Every structure is written in C-alpha cells, then in structure tokens.
Length: 360
Image (tube, rainbow, N blue to C red; front, side, top):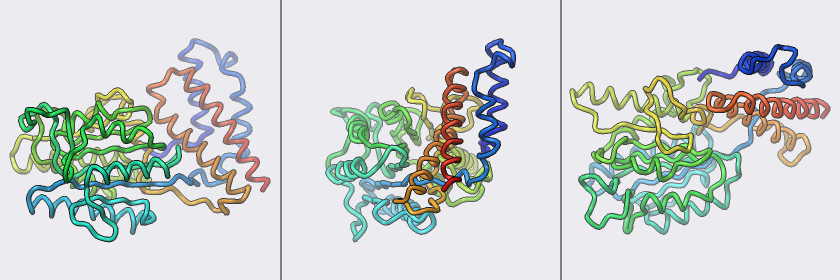
C-alpha cells in the first residue's frame, strides 16, 4: 500500500463515494464536510504529518533447539533481528528482550517462568499506542499432527523445561496494551492463528495446516525483510509488517522452487480477529489492513520537549494521525457511513490540533 493521499484529496473522494453509494446528491451529502475542507486547506500540511511518539518493544524467544545445527541457526536469526532493532532502529536496550538457551548479560533462558515474567513486564510498561512484537523461533507442535504426543493438550512452542500451550500464550498476552504483532515462525504453528487472534492484533504463523510440522525457513526471510530495501514495496522508506510477511512468503516459495521440492510450509496472517488468516499471494482478502500500517521501525521523534504544552499537543496530533491512517486501511471492511462519520470526526480533531500547534 502506498503513502496515503493528501487529506484534502481523500476527503473529497470519500464524500463523493458516500453520496454515490447512498443515492444522495451532493447537496444532500453529510453536513460539515465543506467546513472540514476549508479548515484543513489552511492548516493541514503546515506541519510534518509523521511526528509520532509511540514506543516499540520486542520480545524474541528462541526455544529449545534440540540439536547444535538448529541452535546455530536460531541464534543467528535472533541476533540479526535484535541487532537491527537496537543499532538501526535505535530501540533502547531494555525495549528488546531476548530469551535464548545461551545466557549472557542481556539474555535469559527461555523457560516458562521467564516467558511469563517478560510478558507481565510488557503489560506493565506498554501503552495503547505502542507496538509490541513477540517472535517465536524454534520448534513447535500443532497438537494434532504426526508429531503430537498422545497426552498432548494443544499446540505448543517448545521451551526449556515445561512448555506453554497456545491457550496459555493467549491468556498471557491478553492484558498487553498496544498493537501486538505475534509471530510464531515454527512448524506446527498454525493453531496459534485462531487461538491468539484478537481485535487490533496481528498474528502470523509460518504454517497453514496442522499437518505442517517440518522445520521452517520462514523466520530467516521474515527477519531479513526489515533490513532489506527490496521488501519496501511502497517505497516509503520503512518496511511494514505486511511487507515483511509478503517478502518472506515469496522468498519461501522461491526457496522450495529452486530445490524442486513441494513446500512444507505456508505462512498465514490474521489481523481481522476472525482467526482464519490470509496467504500473502491471495489477490483479495480482508486481512492485512492493520499490518500494512504497522512498523517495527520507530516513527519520527517529537520536535518539542515531551513535558511541554507543545509536546503534549504534538503527541495528541501524532495519535490522531495514526488513527486516520489505520481508519483508511480498514475502509474496505467498514460500512461507508461509519467510515465517513469517523473520518470526519478525526479530521476535525486534526485541524483543531494543527491550529493550536500553530499558535504555539
């Protein structure tokens, strides 16, 4: 999805669409739009529309590897992403939490207790406008596939010691505020799609069936995407979650094609809370709207002291602009009247904030 059109243009287009859809003439279109357009014409564009303040957090977990070759691979993927977030995206050290078998100053063991503690810490620290990534790298079982034990109680991700089931993961992440991006990149990850699906949440699984429990290569390309220019399909300088998902999905397909093998994994993404998901190459589908406007790369910093009155206005403007971006992304899935009403409210609020900021 490309950069959203100027607000004035979007408003005019949306007004015409509404009048056409509902059978009303221009003179009968929603009241207040002319006023909004006049205000926006004088105010919108005077400020950088991408001054944001939301925090970003990442919890990267590599589970029990089992064999040295897996441990090496998982460590490489984990370190690659952690380094990118800290060095290139400037995440503070305490915003990137790593659980892995090889402990060091910044890494703890991937035990059930440490996982729960890390998720509880995210619950305490995150706010509603933050973006939180949880990435699972390692082995897993679907609970119903060929590798499921007889006494299995559902899909699991393999930790060091007792595992957590998909139901337990769902309960542990439920209290976390913000926009959660949960990626289970393991074989046997498919049941997590339905179990963890929820409003405002992005869930990605490397597999699309309970029978797909082989070792996956999706995480290699998914991690790679965030530092890869080719993954930025809309050329806006940042790689969205959707772009990373589509880049990795295409790379996985190519990987199997080059080797003349049938794919043993099929990644799915759900962000509509229906638990069904969508493949990247499906030509149509409701899923993907939120993922298209969600980024691991932080937004531009506020240009005023955070504790000043101007800083507070800029934070509110940033939040309003983010809501507009998300609303536009969700437009295909909303009733036209609901979309128009909410867009008008947000644009009026944006114009008011712009006026107040200009006066400062």
